[in-house]
Image (cartoon, rainbow, N blue to C red; front, side):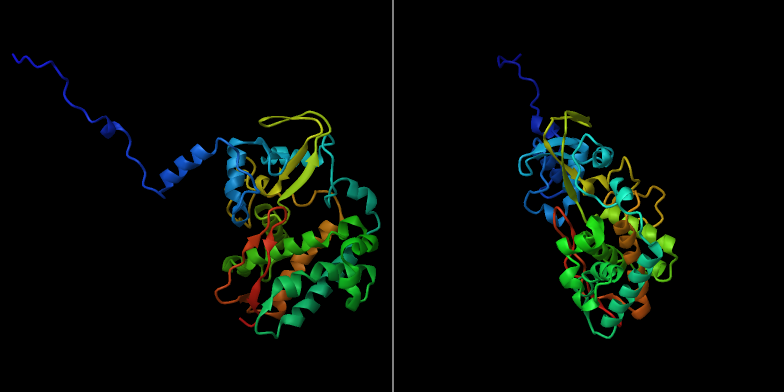
Length: 339
């Protein structure tokens, strides 16, 4: 027997560990994300505006209630919490077209007249760009249609509509809701971007009935809402998913995150024209001429553009890119009217 002390067989303990994921692999990225998520991500972090939905997903899943030092506010991201806060009297409220107070202030609106002015304005604008080799639908169409419908509805001459029917002047002429033209511009730009980037959607909507266009409009507002975030304040201590918001605290409601909550929408990242669980939070569900006008503008935009330009398509090599954190929409939408 050897005088050497007994040593157990040598064992490489490192070999028993799981293999390390290569840098840049999905596994390595996920591991890095888990390490970094000790602190909730902020929608205001650099680079988030390119694709805020990844940040929204982390907030929904891991930080349904968190205080964001950059926003200086508590943040809600799940659909149930955001939808409730938008109408809950325990939160202060900004003015969102379609919320219940609208029904009390808009009692003499002629919907047939709204439809007529939306249709007429959309076709005038479409014909103005039909003969161009290239056009920007944001600058040449979406920027003018919401203002034009308001101008026509209140009798402002076409030549004066952009001078009078914007900002405070618009509110004075057509009421607080209809005067919020910028949101309708952005919503329309996003809707047309969704349509023109999908040949199947173009084919489905080219001669579609109003109901199908309305479904597409709602789906665009859900998946890529023009208003991503709204601010409220808690009137008292309010219990929500993940904890309690203290009285008097500012609260950021992430509309963009709520619209992709898998607890509310099946396969929420996918644009689904025939979705059986539709919904959106950009506008309230009550009657409001601004909400009606926005839907009519979307409907007649599709009809007018494809009626005047049957071969309308995106310009070669162009893909719409949405920007913005509080509001979000394409800054340009380059198209070839003649195909």
